[in-house]
Length: 324
Image (cartoon, rainbow, N blue to C red; front, side, top):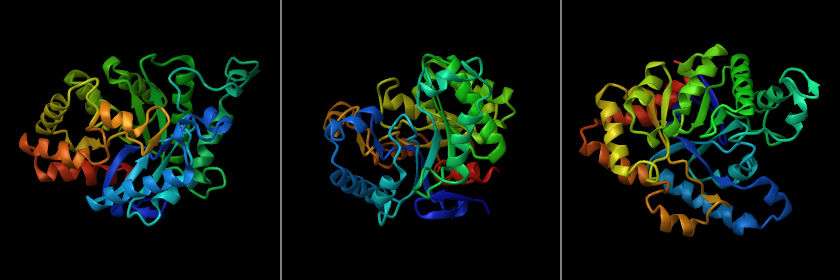
């Protein structure tokens, strides 16, 4: 069987167990974290301890693995995440890519196609490829997936560059691709278009944040092209009410798509965007336990079977990483 790199070492995909496919442990604004290390209330030891307890809470409800989708641009720190995960009972996988809605950072404004230092994007690609094949920095942890972000601004020139770099590295390494896609503006279709142009098999792609749409035309177009849906902002009602999300997901299962959907929250133990107190007040259902406390009971009440739930939580992540 295929294995994947995690904080617990190489793990056979058959042993991933219940897997949440888009979470975060720590999100920190890199420029602020570098200049003002305590920005946002950051205290390293306290936050590692808090994250450890949250991961233990996931293990207690049966979650075995999470995919941490924190990439450069969001303050990725695999060594610190590994400290939090150690002894928690949860394995963590990492991602590579770059988080931006529009522009790449300055080094890539001067080099690359059509730039002052004209050429291909081999430098950009080499960063992603090293994370996947050698390791992230000197941590010894390798990334398991490639990430692309396409938000409301769409495929800007730099986001298009990123998409094509991700596709090229996927082609050389076989690493699967997981995305952040702005569902209300159907950005997942833009991602699929570029990936298909680059020869990516769309069955190796998960289009993220799909529960922010109830448009079956959009969702089924993604699914029918072969990609997985990341139903991975569970607990956030800001774009689509939670009941409507459950209705849509149950309907997709009824239509036979449970084999192409994976679940998560897109939650972080610490983020310097909002404090946990602010989030608990504003979006009280958005927590690491909501899938088990809210989504699964809601799906069962709507007729979704245990086999379909197991498919989304266990079988689909296993098959996604196995490439089957």
